[in-house]
Image (cartoon, rainbow, N blue to C red; front, side, top):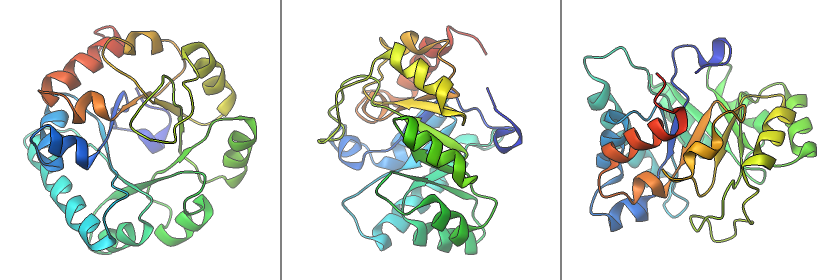
Length: 230
């Protein structure tokens, strides 16, 4: 479930990346979707919205923080909140006493700059897909988690390449040398194919954001990926 002290106490098996448009199309806010998904077993939440400015993103993130707090009230669960890039928003939230983390892509803020801006505590995730990117990530010494994908063909990102498939994913996860999660086109039906691939967990977007029942979808995804193992 975890890999080293950086992930102690975190259930990394099911990682939700939010999509505001998909949530809205399903008739829910992002915060409502997150609350249901966390209640269903999501262990990490990443807020992603490329179409709004920092002020709106800050407001959205605050709503998601409140949703996670509500969903985990009365439990000992710790569900980390990750911001997609948005380093200045993350810095503001940290200064306000919140615990937040960052995920960046290869063309976003460099991981070295993220660490310099946010300090040693936040987890830093990085999208990476090949040997050179893995090596570069290892050499920085600041990347905690690698996101590998897309595993399957996905329409969530318009410019996403073709899916690499579960077998290739497993080889890349073994090569990465950094704890890895898979992302891209992962559904309840496909999640079982990702068992035993050396992953900390799976990342989903539409499988929860577009679901009729996010809580049930989260439960089913977790069961499908773990084979029902706690």
